[in-house]
Each structure stands twice: as C-alpha cells, then as structure tokens.
Image (tube, rainbow, N blue to C red; front, side, top):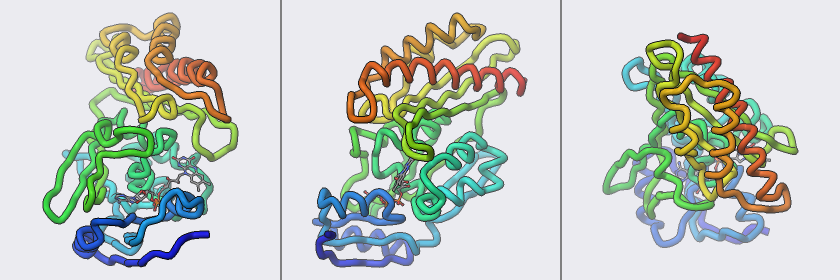
Amino acid sequence: MIHNFNYHQATSLKETLSLLEKCRDDYKIICGGQSLLILMRQGLVAPENLIDIKRVKEMSYIDYDPKNGLKIGAATTHREIEKSPLIKKYFPVLAEMEKNLASIQTRNWGTIGGNLAHGDPAGDPGPILIASNATVKLASLERERILPLGDFFIDIFETTLEEGELLIEIQVPILPKKTAMAYEKFNIIKNNQGIVSVAASVTMAEDGVRCKDARIVLGAAAATPLRAKKAEQMLIGKKIDTKLLAIVGKKASEESDPISDIHATETYRRFLVKNLTINVTRKAWEQAKAAG
Ligand SMILES: Cc1cc2nc3c(=O)[nH]c(=O)nc-3n(C[C@H](O)[C@H](O)[C@H](O)COP(=O)(O)OP(=O)(O)OC[C@H]3O[C@@H](n4cnc5c(N)ncnc54)[C@H](O)[C@@H]3O)c2cc1C
C-alpha cells in the first residue's frame, strides 16, 4: 500500500521550481510514474510531498536546428521520441531503441527525463546519449547548469541532481561527418531492460580507411553507464577488421564492472559485453563507411 502524501500538480516550470523550493525538506518529483510508483508501492520511497510535472507543457518538446542539434524536453515521453520525424531523421538510433523500451503503455507515460533521473544503470537511453556526447540542462530557482550526461550519473540510482533541482532538457549535438551509431541490448524478456547493453559511435577518418574517433558505452555493466575508454583508444587511427574487433571486445569486457544477480552472473555479463561490443562497433563502422 502507498503511504499518505501531499500531492502538488504544477502547470509551469516556474511553479515547479517554486514548489521544489517550498517542499525542499521532503519531496519527490513525479512525471510518468513508471519507475517511481514501483518504489513507492514497495515502500522503498515515502516522500511527504509529491510534485507532479506531467502537465508542464513547456518541458515537453523535440526541437532541432542545424547548428546546435537536438533539444529534447525532459517531460517528453518515450513514445513521442520513438514517433518523432526529427528523431527518425537526425538520430535514428534513438528512435530504434525507443521501439524496444518497455511496452507501448509504459512508453506512453514514461519520459526521457524520468528515465535518466531514475539513474538505473540498465536504462536504455543513457548509453546512446553518452555515446553521442549529449549534455543535460538542470535548473533550480537559483541557477541553471549544463553538464555532460556522463557526469550526471554518480552511482546506482544516484545522480548529480541536488535538492531543489530539476532536469529540464537533454541536448544532443550534431554528429560529426562520417559518423554512425549503433545500439544493442541483450534481454531475456522482450521489451524490458537489458541484462547488458552497448552503444557505439564511430567516425571514419578523411582517408576513408581508418577510424578517426570512437565512443563505446556499456549499460548494466557497472553502477552507472560506463565508457570503455581503453577499448575506444584501440580503434583510433586503425582500420577496423575482425581481428581488431575481437581485441576491442575483450578490452571492453575487462573494463566493465558488472554484478552477479538473479538475471545473470558477472562472468556471463562480461561475455555479453565482449560480444555486444564487437557487434555494435562493427555495425557502426560499416554504416560510417557507407556514409563516406
Ligand atoms: C514494465 C516496465 C518495463 C520497463 N522497461 C524498460 C526498458 O526496457 N528500458 C528502460 O530504459 N526503462 C524501462 N523501464 C523504466 C521506465 O520506462 C523509465 O524509467 C521511465 O521512462 C521513467 O520515466 P517517468 O516519467 O515514468 O519517471 P517517474 O517514474 O515519474 O520518475 C522516475 C524518477 O525520476 C525523477 N524525475 C522524473 N522526472 C524528473 C525531472 N524532470 N527532473 C528530475 N527528476 C525527475 C523522479 O523523482 C523519480 O526519482 C520500464 C518500466 C516498466 C514499468
């Protein structure tokens, strides 16, 4: 059973920030409730005040401009992202991922901001957005700040959000020329969180032969989404082939720090990291080659 709480429904950003300040001692923000209500039902979270931002329309948008890239309001639902012509055109890997995130019912309510703020290392959007160099905009009554998404996650279910602070926007820069991205998750239950997931972004060099830049981000393989930086370095300046991919997959597996739980052992997760890294890096590389 859910405990008693004071319910506050905000209809504007200004009102939300004032409510956060007013309830500073004991509150939780709720947007789609797809993650928070589970915790409340289990009694793991029992806030005195629940601040509902679902009706804050100014936090729900998808904008694109050719200089700054994509801007996604934190209260935008997964389904809106999946269906957006702008996302399909400029960031297709995100639209594809959304198709496999939970059920349509959950995607209709759950939001990108709620997903990131929940801080679950198995969340799907985190690895893709970090691989694309995304930043997040946070706001409180006192200030606004923008930081790389990679710095937003601190620990399992823990983010850098401070008391009185709201995640308001996700910003995705334009991908560099000759860059392609790929994402895969391995799961046992279809359309559920992955046992492990991997996102890769690969940029082809001007010579059309070598890799200029690479980012590999692992999901559910550590306490937060994790960049496999040593594996990335092995790709830069090289022509990517099957032999190199095998070495890179092994390195990413060594860099991961997975747990054993009821879904999979640590050893099995490392095995998955290795193979998913090989798959997604190859996929991104082939697409980058085709784009060049
Ligand atoms: C059956 C099921 C299957 C799922 N499968 C997947 C899956 O395959 N992949 C995946 O990634 N996720 C999955 N999820 C998780 C879920 O879809 C996301 O975590 C969801 O998108 C959260 O968004 P929300 O708006 O519902 O957040 P809420 O539940 O409302 O909030 C989640 C947390 O974020 C905080 N919060 C919300 N919005 C903000 C904000 N703007 N600023 C600051 N803090 C905020 C809340 O206080 C709370 O702590 C699944 C969930 C369910 C129920």
